[in-house]
Amino acid sequence: QVQLVESGGGVVQPGGSLRLSCAASGFTFSSYVMHWVRQAPGKGLEWVAFILYDGSTKDYADSVKGRFTISRDNSKNTLYLQMNSLTAEDTAVYYCAKNGKTVTSPSAFDYWGQGTLVTVSS
Amino acid sequence: EIVLTQSPGTLSLSPGERATLSCRASQSVASTYLAWYQQKPGQAPRLLIYGASTRATGIPDRFSGSGSGTDFTLTISRLEPEDFAVYYCQQYGSSPFTFGPGTKVDIK
Image (tube, rainbow over all chains, first blue to last red; front, side, top):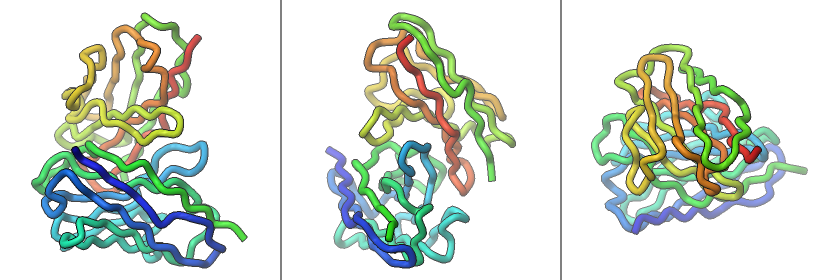
């Protein structure tokens, strides 16, 4: 069965960096577009970034552009999110999610991880 | 960027009642690339509906979606106790893949 397991969250000071990982299993990871979505405490969902199945194309929400970098290692079935210059507004649960289709045409997110909490605080 | 607005913010209903949730987009959503997700406290979101009206795998038929262009609706025909949750719409036709602010369905 499909599993997405995030890790790497924790407490970090403002201005600091953190790298999140998402270990995927139960499907052909290298065939799917992957996403990061975050949710601040008590708030709604915010899409953060996506990466094509081969890593050739990436895009970001304006709120993280220039600070966050999404990447993937298809040999390790793992998705990453490198987060730099963190501020309190980045405090959230970060979820990885997979597209529902293998092709690059638009697709809803059919599986989500359980999330990892990032807290930016001094 | 496509902005999604959901109404109402909170819907207070009893089990067995019908729930009608609305999602409105600031511009037309291409090819009905509109999804609905359910989220319960402490859990990840779960995909309910994609393509505006297609139920995801394993989703009961009491959930239905409709709409096109800028106006979409999620209907729960008869609320079960496990349906009380927050529901989000999302457009995935163009980046950024925006979500609505959510509608909370709680027990009256």
